[in-house]
Structures are given as structure tokens and as C-alpha cells.
Image (cartoon, rainbow, N blue to C red; front, side, top):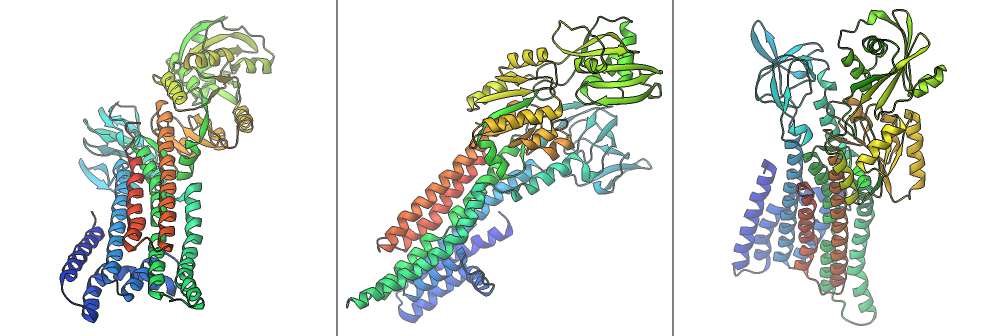
Length: 621
């Protein structure tokens, strides 16, 4: 509990004690009025100030105005204890709401407590702590056991284990050794590490994630926007309704020659005002989404805004990229076939031709070559999107790519009878054989598809630039319903657009990709989900939802969290509006008193807030 909340709690205790004492005193008239004004001002002076400022700034109709009018009116009618009690219980509700919102914020703050306070730089054999913003790219920093990695970089000395739970939601530590890339936000658990930074602090993973979480509240869902507009028109409407209730019935009764009963109708109007306060909706709906985003963060799922959480809850189609999403993206050369030259020479040509590419297939070819790449031997490199690479190695023309590249160059090629990714090679304009590269499925990929179907996903689709045979084999193993292969990046966008046109407007489509090569498709889908995004700037930028590790099981978890959040939102809307309408009718008829009004306002708000923060607790989903 912060200082402000403690101060409010003290005011509530003092006011409550004074109300009890003064209620027992046998005093009447002005003395009783004066005594009850003490606890009223103790508990309600800030509400009166806010109401006055609202009137002064021509922003009259808000909950402070409703409370001020209702309580002052009740006191003027002689209902001192009721007027003060309404203000007291309203402030109790405000305190509870403040605590609940604070708990949600602390939940996210604790989960995302990854902002480093300093970075260690070695100067003359001693460690100096400097601001991470001051560390330049290429600086060697020292991270001791128990400290956070402040900036992304590469380990140049030392071995350790890293705790990545704040980033991924997983408690299993990761081993790290010299040559490994590490990202900011991890906690060094054992050995001392020396890390050469490769990014500035402002561009590091920790900064990107913190920016994402901090900005998530700015992207509001349709439900939140509806409630904001609803409150804008609802509050003035009930104020005018209460005024009409206070004036019209007495005037009509006077015209009819009957007693006007002004006090009775004004009391009903004041009760009407208290009941109508929209706190439960205005507070609980945004809090539900905020708690949902916090609960998702707890599971290593970063959601950029409540609008994306709402869209995810409506998802019925899930479209996957293959490499790096459902497969590990760790390719290894498993065979060289139909080669006219030695395997070593063909691999050398392939590795050198692909030396400028960062694609996993290129890396696997370089790994299989096993020697240091001399880039001076390679010239005229031309990468053909979706086909492969053409280059000159030692002055000899080399082409490395798929069957489309061979067709493009007019070179006859041999089909491969094994399942895997095939890199066809042409040297000096002639076919030189092909290299078979195999990828393996992620451990939970098959289970992830099964869980999605259990979660109510009606269609699963896979899009890949890989060959039809490989794509069909992977889809069959995973249980994916539809697969489209040999696609260029532009083809993937076209296929997603085709699927978007086929489905109904109500059903939403999510695309799951690695967030680097799939940025156009991630943007085009109803909701883009980046897989394996640990340390990937492109993933964080392109996707709407980022899974901070590469476990595809997190997709179904994210969908369940989103659906639970939306279910709670609608529960609160129906519950709050239903209770208020019922109590408003009873209040207008003179059946509901001020105590029922307090329940309709503060009681409903507390119940709605309690319901909202359930989304923080999602471990059993």
C-alpha cells in the first residue's frame, strides 16, 4: 500500500469512528448537523474539490459531481448519517479500486523488472558502474553473478547460466558460453561474464520490451472505447433524469391538487444519482484488460494493446510459417546427391555463394563447409527472393537455390527422393548436384496444434517457401489441415488475404511467424504473433503479440487468456448494467433507499473489480 492509499485508509478509519460516536450522541438540530459535517469533510473534501473544479472547467458531469450532489442533498434533507455514509463507502470503493489497479501494475512491474540500473565497465583493473545509456557499441561490459545483463551483446569471456524468466515466463535457466549472444533483461546466475555490446541501450531488447508494455494501454479495445463513449452520454442523461424525477412528479401532484411531497421526491432523485454512478463500468473494464495483459506477461506473452487481446479472443483461423515457427530452424546437411565433383568442393562452392545470407539454410551450408569463409573469393552476389543465390566464386559462376532457380536459369536438375530442403547447385552453367538439408520439428509443435483444436480453432494452415514434399510431410506430422508450399513472401501475403476473404467477419485470423522474414504477413493478418522472438527487434516491431520464447504451446495459452479476459469484461458489463437498471427502477418508485444505492454503486464496483483482476491468475488455464 503506497502513501496515498495509507492516507486515505486513515481518513476512512477516522471518519467511520466519528460517525459511530456521533450517531450515539443524544443531540439534535444544528449541533447534530455540525457534528456530522466533521466526518463528512474529513472523508469527502477532495471529492467536493474535484466536483468544484469540474464545474469551473465546464466538465460538470462526472462521478465526483454525482457524489457531491447526492451527499450534500441528503444532508440538506436532514439525513446526515446517510449522506456521510454514502461518501464514506464511496471512498472505501475508491481505495479498493486504487489498490486493485496498483496490484495489477505491480504484477506487470515485477514481471518486467528487467530494467538494469547500471553497467559494469573495467577501468584500470577496477569495475566502475555507469549508466547503460552511456555505454557505446563495442564496449566490453562485466556482468557478475546476480546482476542483470544490461545491454545486448556477445560473450567474449566466461561461462554461466542465465535466468530468462522475466522475458519468457519459463523458470528453466539457459547455459551461456563464450561466443553466445545474450540479451538484456536476463539475470546472470553463476559465473562472471564479459560481454561485448552490439547495440546501444535504447535499441536493446530490454528497452524494446519495456516500451511495448508501457504503450500497451494506449491501444484500446472496442469494449473500452464503447464504455468511454457510454459514460460520456450516460452521466449527463442520469443527471437530467434525476432533476426531472425531483421536479416533475411534485409539480404534477400540485396541479392535481395533491401534496407535492418535495422531500420524498428529492430523496428519490438523490438515490437515483448514487445508483447511476458508472464507476463499476468505467473502472472494471479497462482494469480487466490491464489484468489480462499482466496475466499474459506472466506467461511470457507480450500483448501490445487491449485491442489485440480482444481480436485474439475471436480468432478461429491460425496460419503458421514453417521454418523457425513449427520447426526448430536448425538445419544440418544430411546428404549430397548426384554430384559431379567431390562433396567437399560442392559444399565449398555452396558455402561461399551463400556467405552474405543470414538465412538458417545458408548458415547450415557454412557450418558443413567447416572452414573460415574468405569473402574476397566471392563477387557479383545476387540474391533472388524465393529462389536462391547467384554469385562468382574464384571467378566461376555458381548458382545455389531451389528448383525455381534452376528453371529460371534454364538448367536441367535431378529431383531428390528424400524429404528435406534441397539446395540445387549449378557451377559454370552446368548442374553439379544437390545438397539435402533437414530441419526437425519443435518438441511441442504437434501438441500445440492439438491444443489449438481443443481451444476451438476451426482451421489451421501452414504457409512455406519450402518444397511441396517437405511441407506436406511436416503438415501431416503436425496435424495441420491445409498447407501451401513453394511460396514467395508476396505469395504468403496473397494467400492470407485469400483466407481473410473466405472467412466470416466475426471470425478472426492470426498469423504466427518468426517476425523477421514474415513482417508483411504479420501486418496483414487480423492479429500477428511473433514466435521465437527472444532478442528479435523485427519481431517486436512487426507483431501485435510477441511470444518471448519459441514454444508454440504459448499460442493456445495466449488465446485462452484473451478469451478469459473478454468473458470477464462481458460479465462485468451485464452484471453492472443489470443491477443498476433494477435499482434505478426501484429508486424511481421509492422502494430503494440510500443504502441500496450504496450497494448499487460501491458494492457493484467492488464485485466487478474483484472479477476483473481474476485475469491476472492464469496458470491453471
